[in-house]
Length: 183
Image 1 (tube, helix red, strand yellow):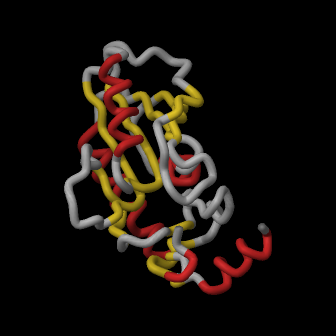
Image 2: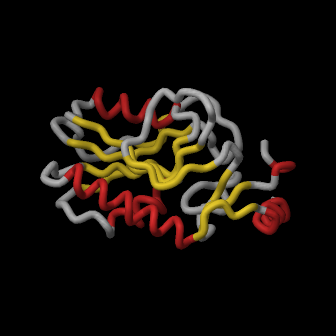
């Protein structure tokens, strides 16, 4: 397995450098600060991919806020998704709150749409979605992100929270897997 991971890392195509990602995070934070000022948001980090993005964004947000986590997964360390599985629900109540979901990527949108619906079902008054990357699929998705850092091509990508089979979330940029290794 580690040989496979090393091969992917060594042969990946850099789509967005660390500097480009950091600039995108700055721009996202500025938009979030403007739009959510005065709302006392509850920030939900969508685990596991959202942990890097949330950590980077939180230090850039200027309003008072609470932080919690949520985890619904379709991938479970695979490269293709299945049914949504609830792993972790927030500890803090969502009733009457403005919620900001922070995730790594808006791919097909099925998981993020399910999390969005869950938050509304728990009584959130508004739910916003922030994603570092929006994958250009060329078709409609069940949800749109309110705050997007970068767009990525329709390839399997990793880095800044996005993983390849559970690895490479810590890559300092956004990379596309070699085309012959996409699954």
